[in-house]
Image 1: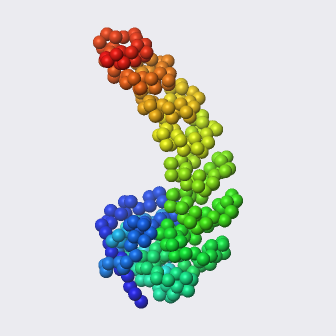
Image 2: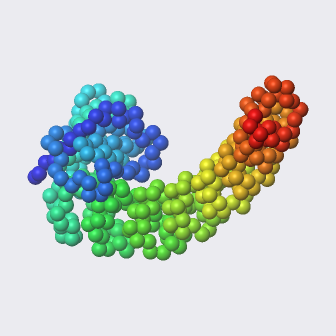
Image 3: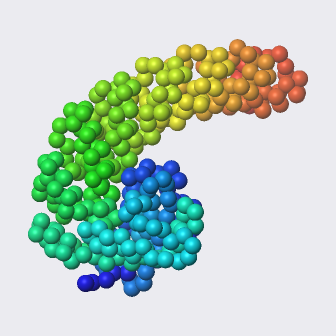
Length: 353
């Protein structure tokens, strides 16, 4: 049986980066470049791993010479952890066997590992039409736990004739059965029909989890096409952002308006600060205009603190456009030019003062 040793990179600090808020079964692997970036044999020395135990799950980050990857194991799958001294753990899956050497201290562990692929599973893949399986793909199949029952699950849900390219994407995006079930349940529940594997992988690549779409539906946005869901996440619009906007008065905000606000850098905090200062019913257009012109809440507050309590947001825009700052007005007042209106300070600035 061919034995593969995965090379290590400097990952001793990896433990501090591990999964502090990661969802249990939602780990994602990362190749160095594109899907086919590293399909050769692994260099002949062991790889490094670091782990974090969360309840009955163990999140493990693996390191190789050209890539790093994360996978989640049930604590029961690993068995007793070596906690008092260096020890070995062997975990077998259809794609092969990983031997972990190392130690756990509390909830964290680290050490080296090696992977031994299973030739029987490789033959099974060949019979399924997947020939020339690389070492790189085999380890990703192991991480994702793509096994014989996985292919049966996919066929039961209508995904037959999976191509080699699709298999690589499923493995490298960690589209395990748990993850796939989440998407398929969403599609059935919300009548998305038959969604292609490429579209599902695209959702995964862009960070669109089923829970995100479900939350938008629960908030009253019944029509959220999958492409729109990708657009929302790409622009940084999550349900929390929309919900917070609703709480500060934007009750009828559309998803397209939310995208526009994000694109222009309008934050919930910005609108709330202005609202707390008494500027009620700020329209989305006005919020965008203010940010585009560089009007901050601190800018408005500065003029109010100087005594211009009735400054309007339109006046704030004019002040910024004409280069009139709080510092400028203070300098003019120090020169004796007090008790002037904002328009007069604008004329002073325009006149070269």
